Amino acid sequence: MDLKQLTSGLIFDPLPEFPFEQRASSSCALIDTFQLAVANILRYVPQKHYKSLAKEFMTELLTYGHIYAVPLKDVPGKLTALLVLISCSFVTAFQMIPNYSTKQLYGKYFITLINAGRKYLGVNDLSGKVFVPSGLGGMSGAQAKAARICGCIGVIAEVRYLIMWLDVYSDNLDEIIQLINQYRQSKESLSIGYLENIVELWERLADEETDSVDDKSFKYPSYMQDIMGDIFSMGFGPFCWICTSGDANDLKITDNLACEAIDMVAEKSVPSSVCEQYRDNQRWICEADKHQLVVGSQARILYSDQAGRIAISLKFNEAVRCGKLKSGVVINRDHYDVSGTNSPFRETSNIVEGSAYWLSKPEMLSWDVSNGVARRSWSGNRKAQETIKNFMDDDPELLVTLPNQIDISELDIL
Image (cartoon, rainbow, N blue to C red; front, side, top):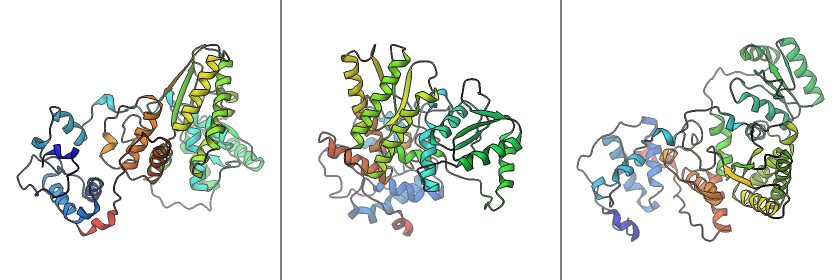
């Protein structure tokens, strides 16, 4: 099949003959991923061809370890090496993120924690709840701040008390348990640093909770697979700005402007899950200053979607134009974004098909978000599919091809 036919729309009528000639083999997939591999390919195929093509794709996969669909020699163009790189999931180091704990991620754990409470406890208010992560490393300060802003009690293996990452600290387990019980009863928020091995604290808490159930299982999804993947799929990711004046008062002004912008976009007709995110992020930005989260430049990171980023940027533009701000504001986005860096252990760990490894070149406000949401909609995420449809309704010039829906149980016969 000549892929020049792609532009004609005559791809499936008639179907090309199944190619029986041998092709180069590649490493075979794991048995439990065969159906997923076939289902991923079928997203591009009209449903009337599922039955016949599913068998052909499975035959290719079992025989050659890869679903080719067409020989490489039939692909028009000169950059076929790049096509092989992308289709076979070969990636170079600069496209991936090997470092899983950096200072750039400070200030983002609030969103993870508040949504964990919503998902597992069914509550929006974490007052009286206890949050005990492992702590340690560069990110543990962010965990303490997240607990405070969420209104719960955070106990973290952390030492940075003097720079106000912690409210109190202790190396005494009895004192830690006493503080936990005291603040659970009062439903006040507190961040506690434990200056010993966090495992000892876990064991002590297990003794305190004698009626808890432990099935002894260890494997659990990462926070990205379990929580943040859906946040990204709704179009929310880290929107950044820096006040070039270096003035802390300018940063406070931008915080207030961001709050006003969020109010504007939240008043529009949006799904309840999206409205929850607007209010979560408004809570974050309203409390950020008093928790002294600035490290270095007068900068802020706020999770926001496409509509929010545009509204906030317009507010900043007007404030600079009228002299409300002393100098300009640099707007940016983090690599850990809706369409950010590919990393199967983090940013794209909840994308269970090949685009988890794809190159993407996100630029500017709209493309940053819609590019990533479109990719996530193709991975089968329902929230992403709903979000990208809303994007297209809002912007007639945005046209995204949506995947055909696959019921993977129908592939059991293979």
